[in-house]
Length: 329
Image (cartoon, rainbow, N blue to C red; front, side, top):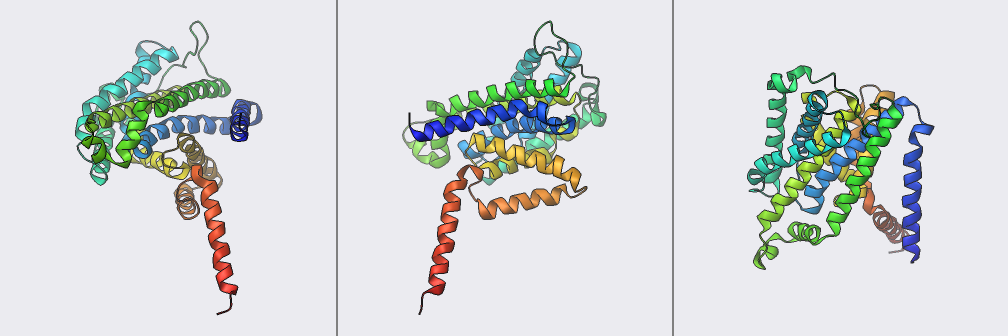
């Protein structure tokens, strides 16, 4: 086993231990913030699957996040409080929604795709506010019963137990995406990002792969929406708003476009900047998020995931500039 694999293994183990210890170390509000960060990490992975892996930047994943959130809520209220049932139904609802809207979205690339997904997100937001009989309209859906993690067990009301439930599902989602990225399908998506015309020239049906990526991302975003419902026990049209999609894209940029663990770390930073530091500096959350974006773009243009190499280049460039400054003419 190489030294790099040993370091990676130790780092993964350390992160796992820290995540497990969160409810034992922090207070209720901080644990709730970590829970929201985990939910947001799953949403950020869905955005990264399209933006970083397939090369299709999106601002519409909040629509499928909302589909999953409302589907999970309705299942919990009218059918089953069991978590696995809510997750499966919500994910399937997101897949169906992505299948219906995907053929329209993938007709464009680049800015055109971005604008189409933005329109889809706004349509989802508007529909959630108008379908009062299904979504509760602007008042949202409340009275959602506590999710049941294991059949026969009581509903989860303790914030620490809810955190563990969301953590387990988020880890499973991360592992599933990691397997997908190492598969021939994942490699093809990277080829779609790097040179779509070449893939088309050698016989690949690139639109089919783009649609498959879109459907995968829609299901993953809906899964995150179901986790949101289980943890908050409330869902409203604001959970489908443009801000949600924009923050998810910001998390991907901060963490590193194309890196799934980077997207998760970016989600953690965005949520804590918005909800935790925003509480300390009341009313200045947008300013803090803007500062986070500017700092990341200036110091780490490839995000946190590419940080080491970028820091080395930045330091070596500064040293070279200093050397030129002291060299006599």
